[in-house]
Every structure is written in C-alpha cells, then in structure tokens.
Amino acid sequence: MSEGCPELLLNKRPKPTARELAERLAGFWLAAETVLHRTLEAPAVTRVGGFYRHRLGASPQQGGWPVKTPTVLDRLFVHWAAAGDYVDAEEAMVWAFAAAVSPESVAALYHPDPLMPFANLEDATNADRRRKPHGIGRITGLTPPQRAAPARGPR
Image (tube, rainbow, N blue to C red; front, side, top):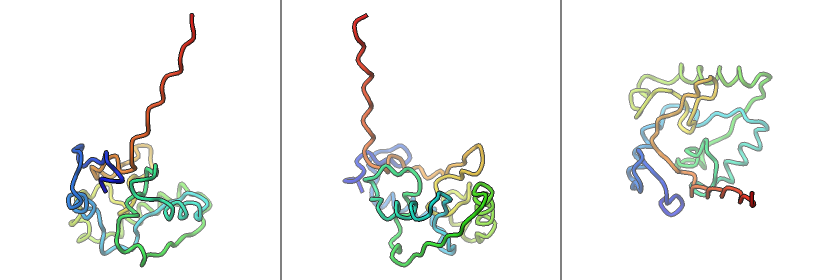
C-alpha cells in the first residue's frame, strides 16, 4: 500500500504497516451483515463502473474506497432498485441498516457510531454529515499539487 499511497496516514501517523491498516479495517467489518456499501448516485451503472475502474491508492475517489479492500470481492453482487425520492430513500436505508445490525456485530466494531455499512465513510442524509472515525488518511494517493497563484502584472 505504501507504494500506491506514499502519504498514507493512520491516526495522523505516517507509514502505517499493512498489518496496522488491516487491523483497523477489520474493526469496521460487519461479518454477519449482507450490505457492504450503499449509494444513491444515478445512474447506478456509472457508480458501479467507477468502483470497477478504481485502483486503491491511485485514484482520487474520496468515498467508498474501502469497497476495494475485502478479499471476497469476486463473490459479491450488486443489487439496486430505483427510487423516486432518493433523499428519503437513502435516509430510510441508513436507518433500516442500523436497526438490523446484530448486537454481536455492533459489539465487535472498532467504533460503532455512526453505524453504517463497512465501505461507507459518511452518512450524507443529514446536515451534520456524520463521518466514520476510521483514522485512515490520504488513502487516495498523492496529494494533488497546489495551484500557483496567478502572476500579477505590473501595477
């Protein structure tokens, strides 16, 4: 991972080991649950295609990158349904998911609040945008270079 993400941080500490990173991700894994990630972006084929093209550590994708980390990806399926009001649908999905997670799964989590599928990093259904406190930073590859301020002409 350090080759693809040389700036990777864990709890703001540079260069975590693969074991440390795996242990942290395992702390968010919901082994008894069937939902890995939920999204409402349309069209679904665009979002799913983005996940297939995404290379962990070499892409600017900010959300959902954990979906690329499980070793069981070749055994997973994408399920989708159309929704008229996607904001209400997402909020209903968030609450339904949290209500269905077993107490045993919650007890095994590194940090259970906010409770959301493994690969979701934030709950975008409300104004406070609760974020999963995973402590993993700069996972999306090199920090983009800063744009230089435009040169000012003579005054």
